[in-house]
Length: 66
Image (cartoon, rainbow, N blue to C red; front, top):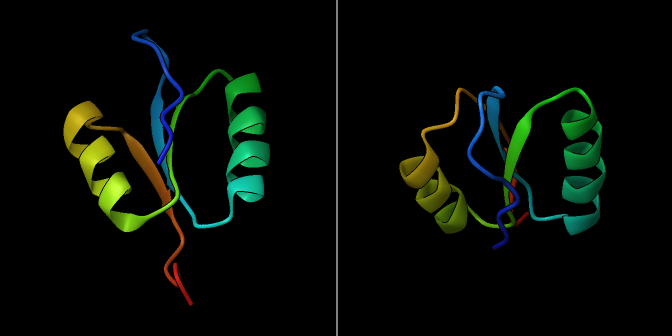
């Protein structure tokens, strides 16, 4: 699990996907559009980040681990 973010007034988004390359590319694209992005590579990490940061938006791989 990894987390990329700092406190700000930016909209927050949680990205959960087991493909780290996809997470990195999408995170970079969203950050360029002024989002604060939190990433996790597993569901447990995603749940932890959701509880810690209460993101406004989420993109979650529904087939994670398959």
